[in-house]
Length: 328
Image (tube, rainbow, N blue to C red; front, top):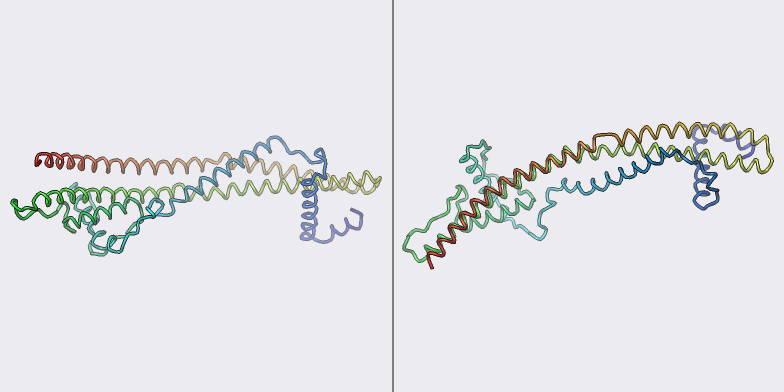
């Protein structure tokens, strides 16, 4: 770099200086990549800085990988069976509204306050596995004689002496069981939607926002890399001038090298501060705690619903088996 070139770079303005510096950095980076620079001529960064870089890399990888997987909770149908093609009939007003009505009546019987639908408009056909199971069971219950508007209101045989009495009784028992199964699955599906909302607000949103903090650390590290390349490019130029015996040129470059050294030190200290702040931020831990809390509450509530349904259906199965055996 002769005096004319140095004079040019000092007069091109900030934009031109950035372009010139960027070109020098790219040239230095390329030379290092292809082994045109001795390892000893590459400035070694502090051990503390390099260890923090490794930790930030690990944090970034964990943040990215878990975030990709957990985004499944943004899609309501993440557990919906793709092989099921529900027809318009299956998710019609009769099935959907029957489940809603049954649920309201069941809640009233348990003295639980519920919002009873005031119109016959069908509820939303949620695309979850539990809701699909509920609709399938409710459709079967209705086909076996369940009333669309009453809980456990399956038709009884018209005559005890009818030849279809036993069959009708079995249909009644199975219909009632399907009705209870539909109610339990509907409740589980609603609980799952509540869990998903909690995970979205308590985990996904803050987890995604924390990514911007990681990017600040990445940006600070980029500044260090650029400052290091800039310094080493000046050192290479000064080394070439020394080898050529151009003392005046060496002396003129020395000030630029010292300035580049100061910038690297400043950029490294700033990056260390930023990386420490990101690594010590409690937000990822808080987000994970919210994630697990939402899951725990869902599984606990779902377990209570299914345990109650299992007890009822188990009793019904034992009673049906006893009746079956006694009739043989």
